[in-house]
Image (cartoon, rainbow over all chains, first blue to last red; front, side):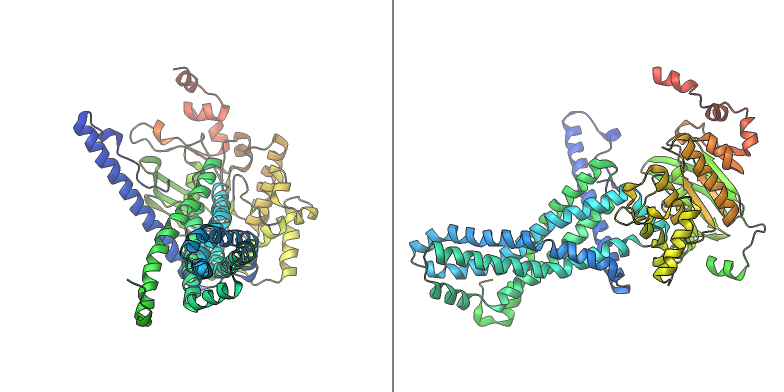
Length: 291
Length: 276
């Protein structure tokens, strides 16, 4: 990963034989653990610096607007398209099982709740990580490799304030809109397929949806998406800032930005889901979710 | 602090050097790049640091402006230690330096005009018209037509990009100009144009200049003083890393084999090493 982080076991210390192999394996494992602890610490410091700059002074309008446009507006079509198809796929996959129990009119509840609570935010985050996260890492990585970030520092401009804060703000504030778009298009796509192609009664389809899906479910998805946006921005900018030299380094930074963001998003998704269900049970004990 | 001292005029061209490097040690992991570097640059001097590729010239230049943190030692600017400054003070101090990067390091998402006026717009309250007038003046000073203003850096040649880089470095009226290999990758004619620009800039703006290069023609032409760095890995134990410090005349007459080989551009024993 570069950045002065420790390498795998020191070759000078490597020993021969079975005990040597065990020793080397433990040493390698230790080195990997130390490296990951160092990366987590580095990303945390990077995030704290970003938030502290955000609190100190907002970036200029002409720096913010292009980021908002690129991250928010240009991502809308792809999020809308994938949202529509995910909604329709859900209808296709669930129909057979639901029909076996005679529950096909409840398909709307399943599709819409899945879109609101899980698929909408995760889909928007996946699209954003793929389309924007990789691009941010590649752009900042190229700026690192071509000394443009050093040039900023040499001019007395803080690169985190100038490069990271606008992208962080744009990801944070635009992802709820993208999530809403994914949920809306998934609902429309699923409803269209269920009613028009599968022939489910539209009144019962939508009334069941209305009965089972609440404002809480919508809030649930949007709340999670804000965290996903922050993760994408911080991880992608951090990867770009710590890019290894050359074209290979930029390529790796772009790939690592997507993979790391996505893994962290899924972990945080699980943690937030558990946490939000507990909050829900605490506020509305009569609607106990089972945890 | 530095800014206040300079504003009060308590820092002048007296005994205090403009830039001073004290016992500077830089390491990347286990690799030692610079060891115990001592360097003092008086006001208005043009110092050229020469040495073969990988000897630590650029690392030295970046350490002077705090882009690379040393393992030990420190840099002083007009008597004030950079390592004792807060982040905010160091950021403010950096506006008193101008850095011309090896590949110009222009922001490729901006036009030439936006690149040059960028430091002005970040640090000074200046109208769009005033900024534009300053950009046109500087572009003329580095010998570029105003037709280049609306172009992107990718549309310019290497020599033109370096000139834009110089214009951007000059826009804040710096006291010290740092040049990282300003003629590398350019043809001899354009290289000479850049050399003339460096000399012209020094006369016109009365700046202290530190230039890193392995181009001996450039070094001989622009330098008041030349310092030669030698790769740490090739040094004898306890031998200083600066193996020459003198005038352009003195370096031509140097009897140190390593210095004279570099000045004449001869591989010497390196050829034998390659064959082995």
